[in-house]
Every structure is written in structure tokens, then in C-alpha cells.
Image (cartoon, rainbow, N blue to C red; front, top):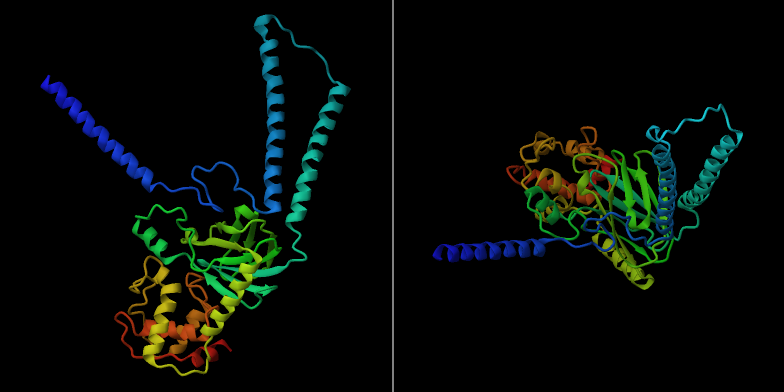
Length: 391
């Protein structure tokens, strides 16, 4: 009797433990991300543009046609095999040709192909029509981030770089990420556009082939170095929408998310005004002469935002990424060598070009690397040196 009670008690303990584990797992489980991927997603993303809705309709239209053909062809085949099997005494017919059958199996497939081609062509043509855009934005792919430049329309002149959130990158490196809905999709500077406006996206790249893809918009366009491609969308609903680089572009391909924030017209205007004020406040006079402490403080921010992801916060690098701590080019008194690396890149794109940074930012980050970790050179790089190197 005591043994039975002990077993029941032990079973109860196990049940409580399993319940606690299940509750913990449920608490840690991620949820569907509005505008992004869903848990156990099988279908296409919910469309928020007319093109995406047309693509979804076309997808199901083709699926039903293919399913009907599949069921019809294999149904007739298996019925014939069963109905006219040898064990029932069926004997095959002996004939050479049938004009009627040949006409039917030529005309019917032709009509099916035409019925599929017409709506598909309509959608493809609409996908390529980037004319009469209200807003034109250039999306530049680079290893491994996106640069956005507002070329035409409200917000013209705005430009910034969008990078994976540093905290999520650190979690990925640690192998112990938090269970958050937007894991590896959170960025520091999302692309912001107005709702109901036609937005043309011009794509290009600085190093290798990338691809700009936002499933909810129904867009995917390669970004190729030396080429300019374009696509477009008109978001019909405000919100946050997510995508990723869809072209295998290197070892950190997974760390190149796209976050598009769609705002109401009034909110977008406020964002434009705020962004321009922010850019004006950050604008630097390249002729300004900086002190070493001020340049180091500025360089630390630039390094954390753009360089630490690859070279690490300790400057040790890793794998094919070279260390900056103790690097000869960093310790060299000839500032032009390191400036050239940042402006032009090296090692076939393993170190990308950082021309998109301002002269002051490049000077600041070089000064920071020359005076951080074990690199105590005392050297100060001024923006004027970078200006001269750009010419």
C-alpha cells in the first residue's frame, strides 16, 4: 500500500514538473509577427498591396487548375486500369489513329494555357509598371545592411543606413536568443513610407548580389553591383512590414533584414520634418578641426553602429574578418592607408566600402581604432584628410 502511495506521489511530482516545463515553453513561444512571418506558416503573407493580392489570387487560380487536371488525368488513368484489367477479361482495342482525340488533346491544353497565361501576364505587366511614382527611394544592398536614399518626392534628400539591431546580433552570436516575435528582423533605422502612395524602389549593390524582398508587398527585386533595377508598391494599410535579403550574399546573409514602416500621410510628414532636422543637427563641417577626445567619442558611436558586428567590440575580429587590435594598417602613421581601406574596401568585398559614411564619421572611426584596445598610437585623423582622399 505504501509502495502504491509512493508511486502515485512520484507520478504527481512528474506531472507537476511536466506541466511547469510545458508552461515555461508556452511562455517562451513566439507569436505571429504582424506584417512578417507567422508561426508554422504555410500560406503566403496577408497582402497589403493590390499586386500582392493579385499574386495570391493567381496562386490559388493556378493551384485549382493544376489540381483539377491532376485529378482528371489520374482519375481516368486509374479508372481505366481498374475497369479494363486483364483479370476481368478485357481486351485492348486495335486502332492506329483518331482524328477526334488528336483534335481534343490539342485544343483543350491550348485553351488551358491561354486561360492561365492571360491573368498571369496581366499581373506580371502590372508588377513592372514603375511609372508615375509619388516617391522614389534607392535601396543599396551591402554586406550586410541596406542603405536608403530618398531621391524624389516628399522626403527628398533623406538618406541613412539600416542595420540589424545590435542586441539581436549579440544574442545570435551567443547561441541563446530571446524568444521574441521579431528575432533577426529588428533594425535601427526602418524604411519609412506613406500609406496610399506609389513608392518606386530602385535597387543596386556595392559588393555582391542582394535582393530586396517584402512578401506582404509582393515585391522581390535583385540588387546587382553596377546595375539599376526597380520595383514598386502602394501599401493600403499602415503598419510594420518585414522582409529580408533573398539572395545568398555571404556568411552574414541572415543578418540583413528589411523593415518598412508605413505611416499615415500626416505622420509621414512629421517623420520627414524630424528626420531632416536630425540630419541637419548631425551634419558636420568637414573643415572643422577636432580634438582627440571629441573625435574618440564620435568614433566609438560610429564603430558600434557599423563595425562591431564584424570586427567585434574588442577589435579581435573572427574567422576571415581581420583583427583591428594590433593590425599594421591601423598602427601605421600613414593615415592614407586606412582611409583607402574604408573608402574602397578590400579582399574582394570581405571588407566593404564605407563611402556612404561622412568624412567626419570615417575620420572618427579611424581615430577610434588607432587609439583603442592595445592600439595607443595617439594619432588623430581629421576630416580634411578624408576629403582629400575622396578626390
